[in-house]
Length: 315
Image (cartoon, rainbow, N blue to C red; front, top):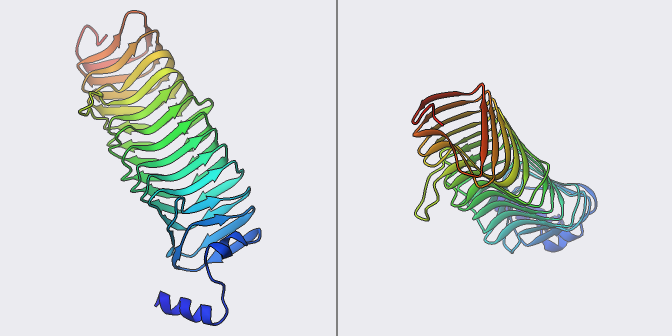
């Protein structure tokens, strides 16, 4: 039926929805009817592509390139074998209610400003890779992604209300060399190797749930939250059901307030190298050891409950 409608439309002089058509679009709203279209496409500055349910773009690597500032893509399904959507050096890009499936990277953003809202990323090696990008990621669903859900390098911004369904071979969220990054109200289930990984970064966490990190044949212990040489502030987060630790701090500093860290297979909390940790008003429950502090590291626990943990008071 869709094929027949498209054939009739073309016969009546309707536009051909191809790469040439996409590259010539003017700024402003452009509807895209349901149908399967052949990529690759490049969208110029200011285009608002409003896809009807059932509109699918497939083909090319990347399938869709953002060619200018102020582009908005809404409701489009992108089927990738390589990169799904690529944005380099563009500003004010919004992807809303889109679905990107398959390929090596669902979305790549480099030196850009990117908002992804209410979209889904699935079936790829990496969900989103961002380099030197200002991010606003809201209500994004990431599932059936093999290696990393969000890979964020030297970027800033907010990740809010997103869900991650693993297992992930590397991490649900990996943050490297990034500052002023805020994560709030996110949910990670069946995290895989690591739920949230911070390396040489500054991160603020509020009301996140991370669960189900698992060790693997490479020897990774399976940590819900892993911070290396980073500055971490965590409030009211939940880190549970890890075969390794709920929280690992290696170097850097971590201030953890009002959090629940439970059901870890190793230590609930591990502090090593020159790391410094403050636990304030937390509940640590169910682990062979509550808090392990290696020589050279420091930790302070205030108003924190250690329940059902091994060792002398769990420390």
